[in-house]
Amino acid sequence: MANLMEVFERLAWYGFFAVSSVYMTTPQSHGGVGFSDSQRGAIQGIIPFFLYLLPVLTGALGDRVGYRKMFIVSFMLMAPGYYLLGEARSFWPFFAALSLVALGAACFKPVVVGTISHSTNDHNRGVGFGVFYTMVNIGGFIGPMVAGAMRAISWDAVFLMSAAWIVLNFIPVLLFYRDPPALRQQHASLSLILKQAQQVLGNARFALLIALSVIVLMSAGVQWLSYGSAFLLIALWVGANLLWDRLPVATMSAKTWWRQPIRISNPRFALYLLILTGFWTVYNQLFYTLPLYIRDYVDTGDVLALLAVFGDSAVNFFAHVDQDALAQAVNALFLQLQQGPSNIDLEALRLQWVHYKVNVPNAELAVLVERLSLLAQQQAQLSTVQLTAMVDALSAYRQVNPEYLINLDFAAIVLLQIAVSALCQRFKTFYVLSAGLVVMATAFCYLITMDMHASGWAVVCVILLIALAEMLTSPKSQEYVASIAPKQQAALYMGYYFVSMALGFLFAGFLSGWSYSQLTLALGRPELMWGLFAGIAALTAVALICFHSSAKQQ
Image 1 (cartoon, rainbow, N blue to C red):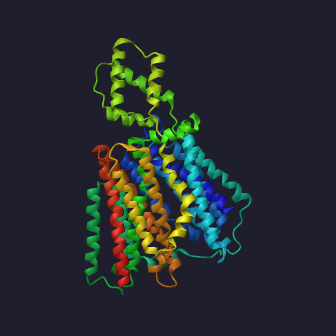
Image 2: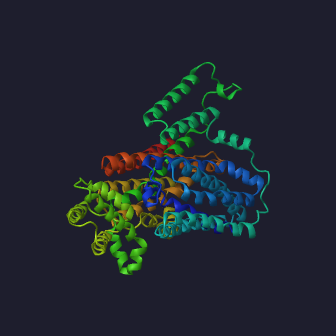
Image 3: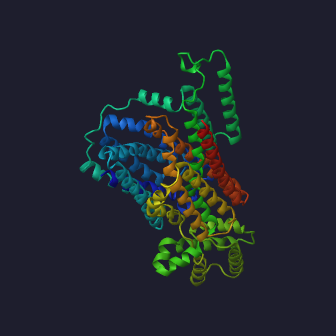
């Protein structure tokens, strides 16, 4: 039952997540919400950050009240949350609806993993979790496929489908699921969780230092502050804390927490999490930034040519074009030109029309505008024949939905993860981990060479490289924790591995929003954006090598 519920939950989440960047930046006139890239980045950074932090608390709550009740609560939060996402039309209502989904997911994650743990033993636990993670990736693969089909109907259908997947989960949880017999009703109290956090990460002063710094950074993300002001405030806050620690009043023997100096419990572990944040920051660009780049700048006609071998139905599925909406856009341009001569910004027009899933070269747009200008001087309206011919010509530049290409990541993992993991067993954990980061940097370096005119197959290669990097790095990054955690505490330290993922989502969202708006759209230099992410991946690899060398010397 746990695996079935996990599949449905992943279908709902990835059905939304894979198209989230495209939806949030799609104008309201095209069915989206029309957020700026900065707003999109803030949402994609802040919400997943809390989603990956909250399971520490919700997991303890599940142990106390029972897994079944937590499942029901999570579904009661997520189902309306997904529905409300489709109804929200401004930033804060959308933010609130996604927060509802994230809270439900945070309730769901620890109890489904706990169910698998309670349902297996030392002999079959590896197989049990192997099946579980296979279900995760199957849901991740099918979800975007269904979402792509739904958005051919309407954007509302995407969110209704995600809500429907969650509603289906009420059937197994209400009719078949029962709490594991071995579940301890009194497990971890809040005080114990806080003590463990101090034992693994640091004391209350350290927590306050990080928490307020993150809050200030989030304030910049939602545009309450400029990033310059935010970084200045963070620097002043860190400086004030360091200065306080030098005062005589700060002593480790002090009973009050605020008089104690900042203490990092395990500096090596904290540094490792910080380094690993770089990987998750770059990896998440697969979902945050690459879909927008594919929509706006990639010509997937070469991929579509292969799909055409399977017939028109395959082309219409993977590259659906609403010809009625496109006809309205052409007619609107004709009426605009009828008002008199006007300078049409061809690049702006191209970026506007990519929302109709056609990426028309500027040269072809110039020909179309010239033809429409002549017709506007000769007739009051376009004939049906003329309009149909123009729409058919534009439809030749139809593009594969970004979510279908991104979905190759999940397909590769489902098909190759076991083989890659088996091959990697021959090598030391650190070497595999480092190789994954190098592959990730290579993928983004390849994107640098594409400039503003990338081909579909080139992007497919990039996606497969990112998938390989994930298959190498993600499992080994968790395994590496055991080598730096104190003996007998590996399980406890693994529980805080998610901190690197939470921070990675946070930085990924903010960097995606800033870099895409400022470097790609404003400057027209996407290679600078990809260079930034390639640099982060390379720097992370170098930092990890230095970290490992230092650890070996100790």
